[in-house]
Length: 135
Image (cartoon, rainbow, N blue to C red):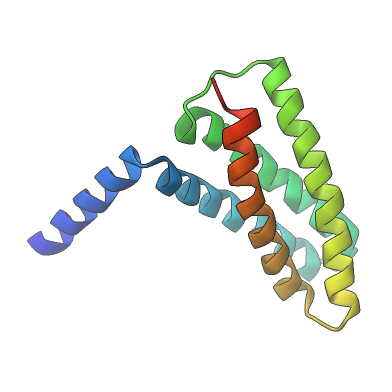
Protein backbone atom coordinates (compact mmCIF):
# COMPACT_ATOMS: atom_id res chain seq x y z
CA UNK A 1 0.00 0.00 0.00
CA UNK A 2 2.85 2.37 0.83
CA UNK A 3 4.27 1.76 -2.65
CA UNK A 4 1.03 2.89 -4.32
CA UNK A 5 0.90 6.05 -2.21
CA UNK A 6 4.52 6.86 -3.06
CA UNK A 7 3.98 6.36 -6.79
CA UNK A 8 0.77 8.39 -6.70
CA UNK A 9 2.54 11.22 -4.85
CA UNK A 10 5.45 11.25 -7.32
CA UNK A 11 3.10 11.21 -10.30
CA UNK A 12 1.08 14.07 -8.83
CA UNK A 13 4.25 16.12 -8.24
CA UNK A 14 5.38 15.46 -11.82
CA UNK A 15 2.04 16.59 -13.23
CA UNK A 16 2.00 19.72 -11.09
CA UNK A 17 5.45 20.80 -12.28
CA UNK A 18 5.18 19.88 -15.98
CA UNK A 19 3.01 22.08 -18.21
CA UNK A 20 2.58 19.43 -20.92
CA UNK A 21 1.35 16.92 -18.34
CA UNK A 22 -1.01 19.52 -16.84
CA UNK A 23 -2.29 20.23 -20.37
CA UNK A 24 -2.93 16.51 -20.89
CA UNK A 25 -4.71 16.20 -17.53
CA UNK A 26 -6.89 19.26 -18.10
CA UNK A 27 -7.51 18.22 -21.70
CA UNK A 28 -8.51 14.76 -20.56
CA UNK A 29 -10.99 16.26 -18.12
CA UNK A 30 -12.46 18.57 -20.75
CA UNK A 31 -12.51 15.79 -23.37
CA UNK A 32 -14.23 13.35 -21.03
CA UNK A 33 -16.88 15.96 -20.24
CA UNK A 34 -17.33 16.81 -23.91
CA UNK A 35 -17.60 13.16 -24.95
CA UNK A 36 -20.01 12.34 -22.12
CA UNK A 37 -22.28 15.21 -23.19
CA UNK A 38 -22.02 14.15 -26.86
CA UNK A 39 -22.95 10.55 -26.01
CA UNK A 40 -25.79 11.63 -23.74
CA UNK A 41 -27.28 13.87 -26.42
CA UNK A 42 -26.98 11.19 -29.11
CA UNK A 43 -28.70 8.66 -26.84
CA UNK A 44 -31.52 11.22 -26.52
CA UNK A 45 -31.67 11.25 -30.36
CA UNK A 46 -30.39 14.81 -30.70
CA UNK A 47 -29.30 15.65 -34.25
CA UNK A 48 -25.56 15.17 -34.81
CA UNK A 49 -24.93 18.89 -35.36
CA UNK A 50 -26.70 19.83 -32.11
CA UNK A 51 -24.96 17.06 -30.11
CA UNK A 52 -21.54 18.03 -31.42
CA UNK A 53 -22.06 21.78 -30.94
CA UNK A 54 -23.44 21.58 -27.40
CA UNK A 55 -20.85 19.05 -26.29
CA UNK A 56 -18.10 21.18 -27.84
CA UNK A 57 -19.31 24.20 -25.86
CA UNK A 58 -19.22 22.12 -22.66
CA UNK A 59 -15.63 21.06 -23.33
CA UNK A 60 -14.70 24.62 -24.32
CA UNK A 61 -15.86 26.08 -21.01
CA UNK A 62 -14.01 23.51 -18.94
CA UNK A 63 -10.90 23.69 -21.13
CA UNK A 64 -10.64 27.48 -21.06
CA UNK A 65 -10.85 27.67 -17.30
CA UNK A 66 -8.44 24.81 -16.61
CA UNK A 67 -5.93 26.02 -19.20
CA UNK A 68 -6.02 29.63 -18.08
CA UNK A 69 -5.90 28.99 -14.35
CA UNK A 70 -3.88 25.80 -14.03
CA UNK A 71 -1.93 24.86 -17.16
CA UNK A 72 -0.65 28.21 -18.36
CA UNK A 73 -1.30 30.14 -15.11
CA UNK A 74 -2.40 33.09 -17.15
CA UNK A 75 -4.44 36.14 -16.34
CA UNK A 76 -7.87 36.44 -17.89
CA UNK A 77 -9.42 39.39 -19.58
CA UNK A 78 -11.78 40.11 -22.41
CA UNK A 79 -9.14 40.16 -25.14
CA UNK A 80 -7.75 36.78 -24.08
CA UNK A 81 -11.21 35.24 -23.91
CA UNK A 82 -12.16 36.78 -27.28
CA UNK A 83 -9.05 35.26 -28.85
CA UNK A 84 -9.85 31.93 -27.24
CA UNK A 85 -13.46 32.15 -28.44
CA UNK A 86 -12.31 32.92 -32.00
CA UNK A 87 -10.10 29.83 -31.99
CA UNK A 88 -12.95 27.82 -30.50
CA UNK A 89 -15.32 29.00 -33.24
CA UNK A 90 -12.83 27.91 -35.90
CA UNK A 91 -12.40 24.57 -34.09
CA UNK A 92 -16.16 24.09 -33.90
CA UNK A 93 -16.50 24.71 -37.63
CA UNK A 94 -13.70 22.23 -38.40
CA UNK A 95 -15.11 19.77 -35.87
CA UNK A 96 -18.59 19.81 -37.38
CA UNK A 97 -17.24 19.41 -40.92
CA UNK A 98 -14.91 16.59 -39.91
CA UNK A 99 -17.57 14.73 -37.90
CA UNK A 100 -20.00 14.81 -40.82
CA UNK A 101 -17.30 13.79 -43.32
CA UNK A 102 -16.15 10.85 -41.19
CA UNK A 103 -19.69 9.69 -40.42
CA UNK A 104 -20.56 10.05 -44.12
CA UNK A 105 -17.98 7.37 -45.01
CA UNK A 106 -19.58 4.93 -42.58
CA UNK A 107 -17.67 5.46 -39.33
CA UNK A 108 -19.71 5.54 -36.13
CA UNK A 109 -20.40 9.04 -34.78
CA UNK A 110 -18.92 7.94 -31.44
CA UNK A 111 -15.61 6.97 -33.09
CA UNK A 112 -15.62 10.04 -35.35
CA UNK A 113 -15.98 12.28 -32.30
CA UNK A 114 -12.93 10.71 -30.62
CA UNK A 115 -10.82 11.10 -33.77
CA UNK A 116 -11.77 14.74 -34.26
CA UNK A 117 -11.26 15.62 -30.59
CA UNK A 118 -7.75 14.15 -30.70
CA UNK A 119 -6.73 16.13 -33.76
CA UNK A 120 -8.07 19.38 -32.36
CA UNK A 121 -6.37 18.81 -28.98
CA UNK A 122 -2.94 18.36 -30.56
CA UNK A 123 -3.35 21.52 -32.64
CA UNK A 124 -4.67 23.51 -29.68
CA UNK A 125 -1.68 22.93 -27.41
CA UNK A 126 0.61 24.78 -29.78
CA UNK A 127 -1.89 27.54 -30.52
CA UNK A 128 -2.65 28.09 -26.82
CA UNK A 129 1.02 28.26 -25.87
CA UNK A 130 1.96 30.60 -28.72
CA UNK A 131 -1.06 32.91 -29.01
CA UNK A 132 -3.68 32.54 -26.29
CA UNK A 133 -2.03 32.06 -22.89
CA UNK A 134 1.36 33.69 -23.37
CA UNK A 135 2.04 36.34 -20.77
